Amino acid sequence: MARSDATTDTTSRLGAVLAPLALAQFICSFAGSNMNVMINSISKDLGTDVKGVQNAITIFLLVMAALMIPGGKLTDKFGRTRLLTIGLTVYGLGALIAALSPGLGVLVLGYSTTLYFTNVTSRAKAFGTISAAGGIGAAAGPLIGGLIASAISWRAAFIFQALVVAVIVLLSRRLKDPLPADPGRRFDVLGAVLSAVGLVLIVMGILAASVNGWLTVILVVAGALVLVWFFATVRAKERAGVEPLLSTTLFRSRTSNLGLVTQNLQWMMLLGTSFTVSTFLQVVRGYNPIQTGVVFTATTVGLLGSSLLAGRFAQRRTQKTLIIGGFAITAVGIAILILLVGSTPSPWAFVPGLLVVGLGLGLMLTPSVNIVQGAFGDSLQGDISGLSRSVSNLGSSLGTAIAGTIIVASLDGAGYRTAMIVLMVAGVVGVVFAALLPKEEKPVRVTAAAQARG
Image (cartoon, rainbow, N blue to C red; front, side, top):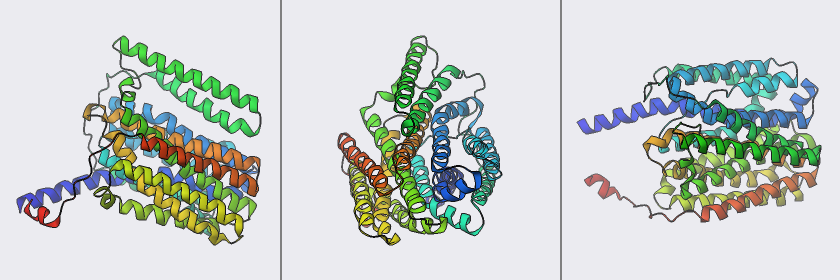
């Protein structure tokens, strides 16, 4: 009886910790996709075009990716709970700024500052849960955003985010720092700047592809050189015995490296599909936000369903198998979106493909995170979790930038098909990288009788 009470108490405490963190990741991912169903509304209200809205979404996701690792390091210096509260406050203010924005420039400012600080946790299982919550947030964003935009205004969607953040702040008041803050700990300012600048240059180069090809080449090459410079400073600091922004130890695990690639590709496919389909429905076919959001309900249902069954799947299949299967299913879903949509003007033609895409993504999001986190011990959990989320958010940014640039350059059926083919190829590449993951031991199936004896 005492053992049962202790287990219940532990579960309750874990739930109290995970609830605000998972909800925070949900709202961050929601923010990255809900704007997709408001493209026409925002464009008309702010006097911009689809390209302008694409830039705003991409920049937001890019800021998230660029500041994830520095944010994780700052939590070690100033305390996780304190920075979580500060970050939530900044997020809420950013959402309100975006809601009141008179033009695109202010919208980008508010949208980007929401992720200025990001909290990280130190357990693979917790990050699996948080990652799943993020996936559900990204999938549900179009539906919830569409409902709010149609019933009230696109601006109200940002006020909704601010209200959710207020709830998270209240929930996080019960959190306690697992480790004491270390104000004397050094922070690699140069590394933070170089890593952020490198990522920004590369993604901005991709966005410039529809405007000037040479500018794209220049920006991408410049970004790559800055990242090389960043890693050179990391190596120099490690040789000098100084703590860098990111330890090279994090890249010495083949399993983790392959897992990070799969994470990047998963989020690239999710946000890329969301933006491409949303743009096609609104700009080409003239759907309003609620119509677009309802169509995307299929993705939400698929992702939520497979995420809820992930634990049961993990008892029967290895994580590697789940990731391979997830990529294959998602690629099939995208193929369905290409084939069925081209054969009929009915909006319901999108439902089967989006449902399959959701099923595939929900199947593999958590296993990829667990593989990456499980490759390192407790001492590196903070660093690898920050890198993991940064890579995932970079994938989201790349998905919107690459697929978005293709469809914005040709707002018709041809542009849609090309963008979706690129995302389907990403799924095939994901299968290849997942297949390269080391073999795992098959899960041990525990029978009810064994559980009763244990």
